[in-house]
Image 1 (spheres, protein in one colour):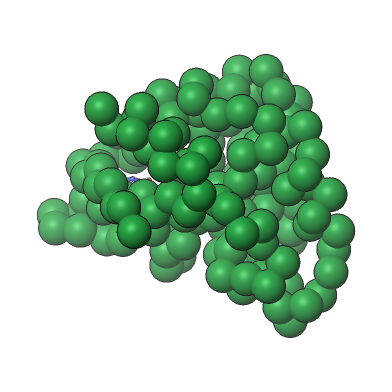
Image 2 (cartoon, rainbow, N blue to C red):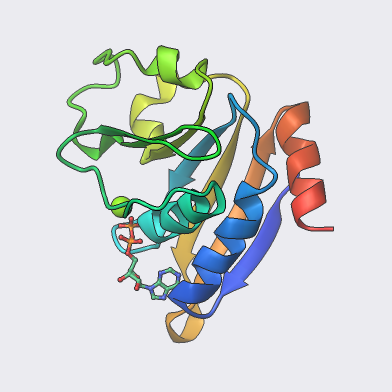
Length: 151
Ligand code: ADP
Ligand code: MG
């Protein structure tokens, strides 16, 4: 499986990278974000939203699970941390197959409901307060997306 790494030394670097990433996204793309609390999942999503031309402030949807934003295309921002069981069905599939881009924080908690092809980004704390972002594409679409992003 291919892996691509980006090291972010400060929050602004994460948002800047995510903005550039957003320009490559297409309707129906699904991005899974994995990492501990404070790893930068929401920070990444904020940058991604900016890149989609979304002007509303994006914050953690912990209490609502799914938030929808309107930009160049819709952004469906999910934080499934509070989903009680992996088969609690909140209609995620309709978002994955929708006209927007879906970003799922803590995606593994709804593993069974995720589409087979997606892009997983692991965010970890690195040295000196940095963050290490590891991109793991699954499927042709996301392989080429990563190749373009990291070329
Ligand atoms: P999560 O959604 O994974 O819980 P957040 O994005 O809400 O994480 O929080 C990340 C916190 O870490 C923010 O307070 C942010 O300012 C800080 N931070 C420090 N360095 C970085 C970095 N390089 N990238 C992203 N966030 C960083
Ligand atoms: Mg978050």
